[in-house]
Amino acid sequence: MNIRLWYLIHKWTSLICTIFLLMLCITGLPLIFHEEIEHLSGEIEAPEMAADTPAASMDAVAEAARKRRPNDVIRFMFWDAEDHPNMTHISMAKSLDAPPDEFQTVLVDSRTAEILDEPLSDHGFMYVMLKLHVDMFAGLAGTLFLGLMGLLFVAAIVSGIVLYHPFMRKLNFGTVRKDRNLRLKWLDVHNLLGVITIVWVLVVGITGSINTLSQVIIGLWQRDQMAEMLAPYKGLPPPTSLGSLEAALQTARLAVPDMHISFVAFPGTMFSSPHHYTVFLKGNTPVTSRLLKPALVDAQTSQLTDSREMPWYVKTLLLSQPLHFGDYGGLPLKILWALLDVFAIVVLGSGVYLWWSRRKTADKRISQVEQLHRDYAVDLKEAK
Amino acid sequence: MKTTWQIWGVPVLMAILTVFGLLAALLGVGIWHWISWVALAIPVYLGFHHWMKK
Image (cartoon, each protein chain N blue to C red):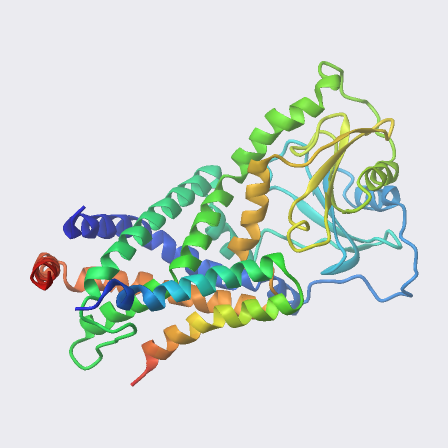
């Protein structure tokens, strides 16, 4: 393909996606540090107690949440021993099938079963950043649209890589021509920061696009592996009363002894069946702590129904999350993530500036680069 | 005129460092996190260095 065609691909894919990518890069910046920001803004923690204080029965913990919000039902319970020790996050909603983003969190002390807090999760700066970043307040359609923009962004990067070569024929790496004109300076900065961040933006862009498919991927898993595991329950009426949650958790622990519990989906929710507590367990290494493994426990008998490794497409989704969030290598990695994000913002912004400042003479510039390309071909022939 | 290697040498090296840095922190713990930070800091430093130099 010739340079002009690559230039047109670069121009048009960039023009369509840049405004959304700028929004994603800017809203993503505070999201990188959401744990630190939540910590500083006074997120509640379980009080200090003797280290050997025993945990309460999770049935009592669940009951405490139900008493606090008698008109709501519990959909999920989460535990995170590292970031929030001795605390149970309980996600409640008006009904089991309420939309996924309509929930109320209740925080309960895992040892005393006392309510710690009922934080409002649908307001504030970080909430707006997250919603803009995930779906622009437009639900699943917004999410999938941003995934499409991510794919256009990948096309823009690939065409940008092709164009880097002819632009750099006469320049040393890292040249920034500051003494001639503003446009030339920003062209050089665009090329420099663009080429340095190629791998990072490709990784974050592709994993981000994969993340936009999470609801689709979960739906696929439910129809595929989940349906197989639930085959014996097909056609049975849903149970009228549920057995002990604590017993179900214990069954899961015994069934998967080398992992620990990350969260449990209650019967009738999107990660479970009407008949089961589905317990999700995680491993201890950086990779296995991302690869959740479900254990389906019969909610009435507390017997294990099945426990299988996730299929490849769910594993791909789960492993693409840390590579998008940058939350897997401590604070220094987050800072580097933020600096690379700033580079990406500069590349996007300078790209818009380059297009705007030279719309009329862009054709002339491409002719020059083409001429350079032809000169180079002639040089090669003469050299032979 | 620059050769392909003169044009792509540094960018390819930065790409390798980035891939290595991203995977080191994902697959390893302890010392691997330090190695990851150093590997990723090199392209970040190089970007600021050339961008901001007089």
